[in-house]
Image (cartoon, rainbow, N blue to C red):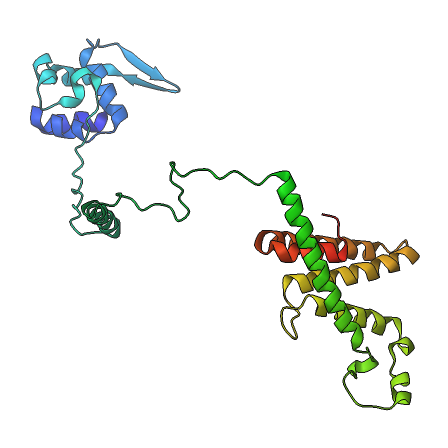
Length: 287
């Protein structure tokens, strides 16, 4: 207040007062407006906290601030005790005239639709497996027909499996993969699988089972071959756990093998149902 009053004494003009008041703190703006609207008495004091202010010294302020000056446009802060809002000159946003990627895609879609309509085609392409509504529905086969087809397929698959088993039995299984070599009977007796250990017997059984479902020579990665290999390992672990019942880590590994085999069988059921049926029937799996 004192700085404002001293400035008014140096240059007693309404324009100077307006310029000083326009740059004062908002709190002082409201207080000056309040004091200007009052009729100050010489002995009137204003107390706030521990400080006391004598308002008699502000009589020249009230005398200078006449009602006409308060209503003048040069002092907008004193009208209705509202503060001044400074106009911020924002830079105008630059308009984008460049053809963006999104606009290009939209224009390409519009042109493609117009081209299809001009050729007599629908505006949008149909889905890959679209079936028109007027397509007649073919009823499914009856239960008797499906059972007859399943029985015929089982007989054919069983005959093919018997033929493969007979061919595999014609070739002798020897230790250390010595099959197909010319040797004397005594050497064959030494290399006979009956003289091998349990590991060699299981490996031979696994190999012969995989050969029944191979799609080509040396096939070890097709789905049917994987199921046979997993089934052989599962049977081996089941025999082990029947003797060692407290082998908890072995039980956990057996559960993991069951999950792997189930996933492979689910894949075969979706992709190659005929091979799936052959494997399930030949191995006696319950699905």
